[in-house]
Length: 296
Ligand code: ADP
Image 1 (cartoon, rainbow, N blue to C red):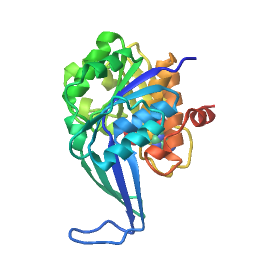
Image 2: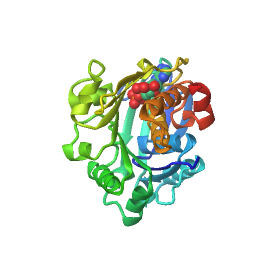
Image 3: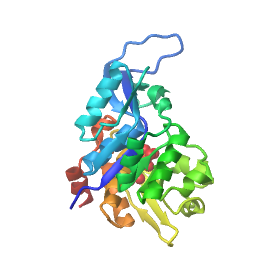
């Protein structure tokens, strides 16, 4: 089987994660117990997830001219993602400063940095989108860029998967260009005012949608009449960060391979479950063998 071509347009952040016994109060300095620096941002995570799941993946995004940009590009490239078109813009990279306490609670500040400068897709970037089987986008970059990418994809027959995160309302123009919307419950409520009590409500704005519900699994709905629940795989959850990214990346690959969406959602659920078994956002994204082993 040839590997499906996946173009991901989205954010790249460096996550700076400090573990402390408790979260500091304003003005307080605490001694932390541990520190890690891992690539993050939904765009980079989903690109890495798609490459590990077996996609031939190109990442379209922007990093800053700082040391984080160099490290981020290297880490994404080493995951097998084509970073040849990753922009380097003057200034800081997107950074997430994360504090995690021993109870697993966190406090996070994200500064978008270079992600906010991802405007005006270039001809080579548009060409990469048109050449892909599936475009994957999220909402951590300027909305106009997401719309331009989705429009170019649609015109070229590239299927558009939009993971509408973080939650916000969306213009009809963008929803019209989406072939498959992937949302969690918070995001679904922001778009159609309904969640698990009525997954099919999403069909009032898009052709097809997946509503993910963490350990409660996922719903797939299609205007052809399909309303199907994919139960979650039973795993011991250690860290649920990036489960949605693992899910979306794997879903794009399976759909790009030509699998039926009901089956693609089941396989993507195995990817999400495999991800939560391990600590650490992007480093916990599963590879194809691991997804296959869990999916059975
Ligand atoms: P998000 O991180 O975007 O909120 P979810 O938490 O809904 O996304 O996770 C996406 C998918 O990953 C779920 O639909 C499910 O298939 C899988 N998943 C997430 N958490 C678990 C879990 N604790 N156990 C098993 N599967 C999970």
